[in-house]
Image (cartoon, rainbow, N blue to C red; front, top):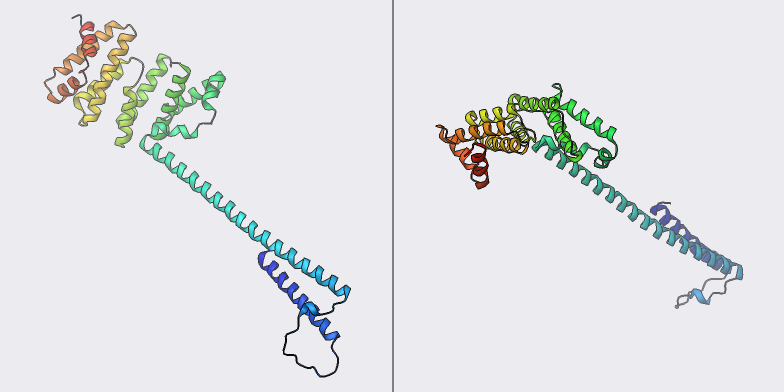
Length: 294
């Protein structure tokens, strides 16, 4: 029952009560002329038959019941409004979260995959080797697929690196080289400067030693017109040197130490300044001198 229906029922019940009283006074009236009294009649002073009193009491109870129901309907309507408001708030929060994830992916495409992973992804890749292998192979295939968009390929790279890190696994040499080739290709052919920088940042943090990667960053340090990219390149070369030292690849470490020293003493003032700035730590000097046999 709606609120207006309840109000209508209450009105009719009140009218019925009035008609009952009027009917009683009409029946007990005579044909004699009515003498108008100055004092108003008091309903309590009327002598009402037992049956009529019972009917009036029942009618009064019905009116009270209608009032109670109307009150309940009003409260129910308020509750429904609250539920609707809660639903709207949840929708707004979901929209805001979706926009936040889109903005994160726009700023750093390599992080876009995070929002698409199952909630139990971290647990599943640890507990289910087949699922882990499937996830790694799928991410690798997406990265190497030239028909995929740059954002999709960078997202696949992000997932691949995180999964390997969590499982403490490495790709084999062939796969690792294919990843480096793919990332270098993205950085060279993209028309989006933000994607280029993001790709180079990821490449500079590669954990494996790669002569191809060192040559690429040396070229960027010497020729790129973006100072930030040049700084990334200097850091990447130094990182490659330390990884070669860590792996016991002394011959390659010595070769990198010579390159780094040559770049620091370059006739190109900008190149020399950037490399010198990245070699300020005393430990760096000690390791370079040690690799050079000084």
